[in-house]
Image (cartoon, rainbow, N blue to C red; front, top):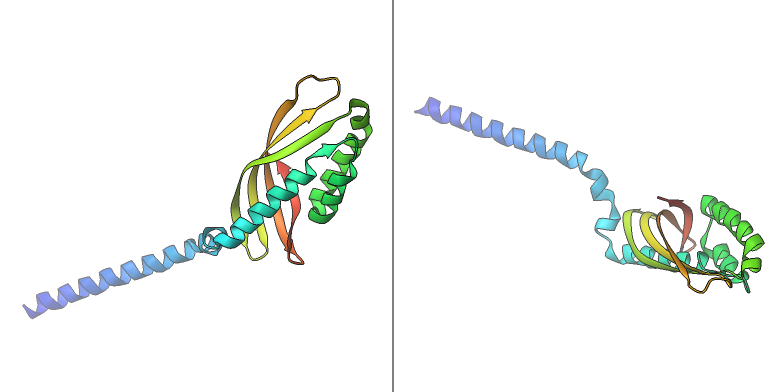
Length: 165
């Protein structure tokens, strides 16, 4: 009976050891998800989502009569690759828009913060853009899906990358 009890205790100890090692290994594998603050920091997740939506609405809206509005917004919210991409698009728009009397109005329909770590965020954003030209009687709607990288700089979220999907 003592031998049976000793063997049973060894089996139970072995099971606990295996479960402990398994739990330790799983916790190490889960660490990227644990480090993703988008899953735990609702306030910052909401803040970055709102800031990016407001920035994109301003930057992707354009009025041929006063293009400086979107350019001033871009000065404040875009850096790096995002700013370079905007400058290329803005240059092309500046050439064609006055002749067409083009007005673009952007609206963010939905966004999700995929990853948030410290002062860096990656988002998926769905944007609708309505374009109206003087010769058109109806506005045309286009939709875009963008992957956005944002960074907190001097207390404000700036967009460093925007990539159409």
